[in-house]
Image (tube, rainbow, N blue to C red):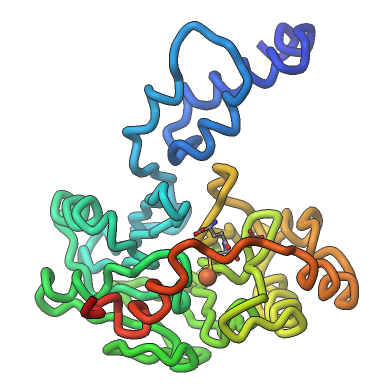
Length: 296
Ligand SMILES: N[C@@H](CCC(=O)N[C@@H](CSS)C(=O)NCC(=O)O)C(=O)O
Ligand SMILES: [Fe+2]
């Protein structure tokens, strides 16, 4: 297979590899963004974009014993929501759920027979509204959680070193401010997975031009709190705009185009991103300060 692929022209090779990857592994795609990236400009007989846009979530085998893990995708804001559960006790935690996909998430939780204990936001999001408030109304006993530095209301205000326990597993809280004051990274007990929110993205990082953003703080957070994790620790961010689903600490330490630079160069890069503001920032931030339960 590889020798055949190596003889064809680069674009055909990319397509062949893509199709092989998509066919064989369920976790290779999470929605339209990735499909667009791979198929943009290619002329082929079927409409692969149409064939895959109904795909709302993907799964990946967790390496940790007795851990159920799902990576779910919301395509409008390119947000990843993560579901983790103890396969024995069925206690579950949901990270960064989005209002638009609340029915999908609740259906999955119900189908899997899980008892969702905590819905946690990695920070006060600026680009979408969280579903944690509404979810609490629909699931008895569910608690919301966010950093105590976020300024947002929630049942649980998290601090550095706190543990979010579900069955025999837990997530440890690390403060990783810089994108916002209240940004958290949640690290699985065995340090095999880290949920980095908008602090560290795959080959990128959260912007620092609004919501208490500070490039120096972000650089220090990532170097001190994330890059000190084991190289093989899997990185799961809150967003990806290119269809990338997962990275590792080792990969980001080596290849992240922003974080491999010196602090001075990083600050210059971040101060010159010139990105448009998230289109929903003016409704999302006030809503997320109250768990998404604002009255319009
Ligand atoms: N176009 C999107 C917003 C895109 C954006 O600003 N993303 C944020 C994370 S959500 S607060 C970010 O930090 N991006 C970093 C980058 O380098 O892209 C929209 O309109 O919602
Ligand atoms: Fe954000």
